[in-house]
Amino acid sequence: MSTPQLVVHRDKELMAQAAAARLITRIVDAQSSRGQASVVLTGGRNGNGVLAALAAAPARDAIDWSRLDLWWGDERFLPEGDPDRNATQAREALLDRVPLDPERVHAMPASDGPYGADADAAAAGYAQELARAAGPENHAAVPSFDVLMLGVGPDTHVASLFPELPAVRETERTVVGVHGAPKPPPTRVSLTLPAIRAAREVWLLAAGEDKAQAAKIALSGAGEIQAPAAGAYGRSRTLWLLDAAAASKLPRSLYPPATA
Image 1 (cartoon, rainbow, N blue to C red):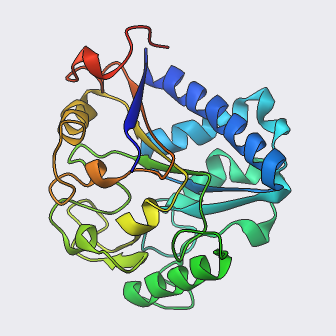
Image 2 (image 1 turned 180 degrees about the vertical axis):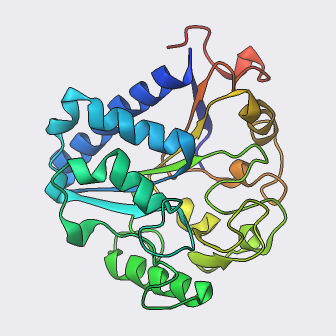
């Protein structure tokens, strides 16, 4: 378990731009050292903001997109191409603009895909895909992702792990179907905390006043069942990327006075 590090930016636009620059550097470093990189994407306004900022960054061409594996932390269980799917939004923000290898873009199954409307079967299928990509050097039945990004919800949820629901209590499976989510749509597919914690680095994104209380709760010693964001951490690094509004309820002792 790595101790959370906090970086607070002036506003959400600057946060997105800085996160995109940081992500480019991390991917390039991984590709330089191992020949490839693996990243888990997140949806929502902050996750999509980072992808849009990456698309606009001149330095994006430093990435060898053909040697990058992309995964998702969760997905709304909707038909392929639905505008509310995280994969659809990611394609619009970035993926359709860069030369990715389609075989290395691992979208979660859609509700009209090979598993039909069975979210639990879709989750099991994605878990098998992750397991096939994991090597003997990995720490779980998933690849050791270089960066796993998570948006933090106002209720402290991350991925589709909501407070008190069964998915956040999962200790063995790496992917689960989520039913009865309090945020629409109610049916989803999500990585679990064991899969999240296999990542080398976990980045939690929070911007806006509506995330301030969630950040305060998650960073003040709350339990992961009540505050799932508190249970999301990487093996080597856990990084909270916030704007000033989201950090407004945190004690300044948690982050350096010099913020970006």
